[in-house]
Length: 466
Image (cartoon, rainbow, N blue to C red; front, top):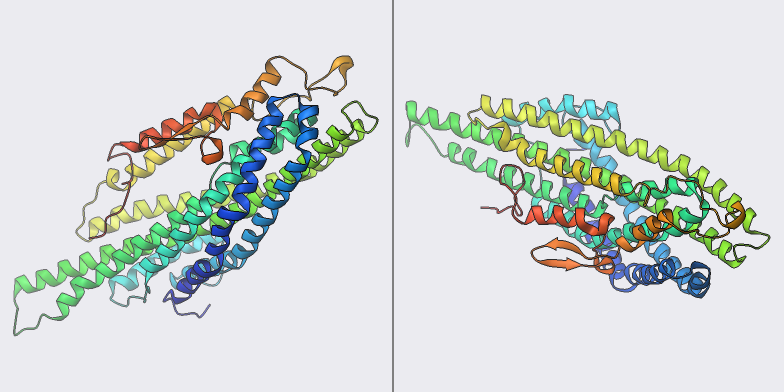
């Protein structure tokens, strides 16, 4: 790819997001997706906690209208993001090419290796003074950050709504739908937050790159007439090393930002598919309610639902395998950059400690693993539905049954509405963005930890540009 690496095209993508995507997201927040999803949540919560056959019959019209509105709003958002995701993939290749990765770089393990292999060439160019024009990365990052901020509540509503909606179909239809429920409950990552994080990395890269030019500008003012000798040469060397350090960090930040934006795009498509799965299973459940559970067509509805769920599960697991692969690449890049950064920074006069670079990353990783572990524990069998279909009188699936299994399912549904601590003394319930597994306790504790975290084991709450 012959495009000059000046990131002007990245700015164009950010402008496109700012002018086209963000207005759609803001409109969705105000008029389309969020009201529809919140209305759906209320209808379904009422239905799950009351006799289901009666309440779902009463709520069918509300549910259908709400899901149609939510699906339409999400479809518009996906269409608007689709072009941006394609551009993000192009960015990935351009960055790899600029870093010396060649035309074969891109997504996938080979692309990741090319990027890692090419990073040294870019660092060498920066150290030699042939710096590429990074453009206005700070403004670009700010636009991505604003887009992520607008998208985050929409994603959050979709994620939580899918978690509520899938409960009743999983209870009625059994393990095949339970696998879909498992994917919904165990993959709660918000793509909007990833876009925000990618924007923050862009902003950091912009600040570092701009700061790197300052010492070299001072060096250019030095002549033999105004300053010469050993001190002058030492100053020039230190200025060059300082500039190198900042540019190396900026290149790392840009590459990580690209990976995060790509991951956000893939997760957007993933949640679009999970929303489709949820709507489909809900439609089967409404059909089951329509035949009165004991009607002649009940067995046919159950069979059709499980057949559709089995096909959907193949696609869900295929997408998850790709996400896992790319997540591994991102983690590998982050780890490799950390190791390289420590050695390169030290060789150029900046003796950084491992804890300074890896402390926040390790803290985030441990927090994520703990949250995942608690979620996996509390969602078996309540959320994962890893059981046979509940049996009614006579052994046929004609009722929701009773006992601990039913209590577990209903507890999972109710848990999505229990207030969750958001940090800074703020509590929210399900319709406002709270709720979660275990009555919201794990998420609340994670937010409480972030109120006053250890400086060694966390990233700062905000980056102050000086």
